[in-house]
Amino acid sequence: MSLSAEIILRENGLRVTPQRLAVLELFLSHSGFHWSADQIRNQLLPRIPGLARGTTYKVLEEFVRSHICEELPTPEGLFLYGIRLKPHHHFACRKCHRWFDIDVDGVDNIHISSILPGAVIDDIAVTFHGLCRDCRVNESQ
Ligand SMILES: [Zn+2]
Ligand SMILES: [Zn+2]
Image (cartoon, protein in one colour):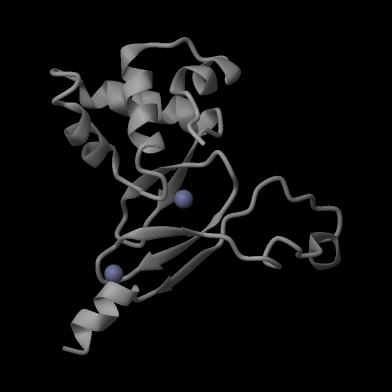
């Protein structure tokens, strides 16, 4: 399945600009990756020379507001961005700091009204922390 970046932008009411296209295409071609704004900018500089940090942040903010992207605060005090066309949870490796998308059944089925009467859930973000397989293998060597 290949989703066109242009279609996604239009469906979310965003004008198609080279910067928005470049950021979105980077995410679409690396699904499951989560990066900081600087990591995103560094990967796009060869394609868009002179891409400003401010522009990168602005595009990411727009994507977060449109729910195209997720913004993940990390224990290291950074923000990571990933594509969020479909809600998902995360596993964060505390050693290599990579974040992996995971689907977990059941976590979403919390009856919030019995815990916080009157409250309604409109978003859910669950993060599991631990060591990924690569880091576990390296640790045991
Ligand atoms: Zn790891
Ligand atoms: Zn994610």
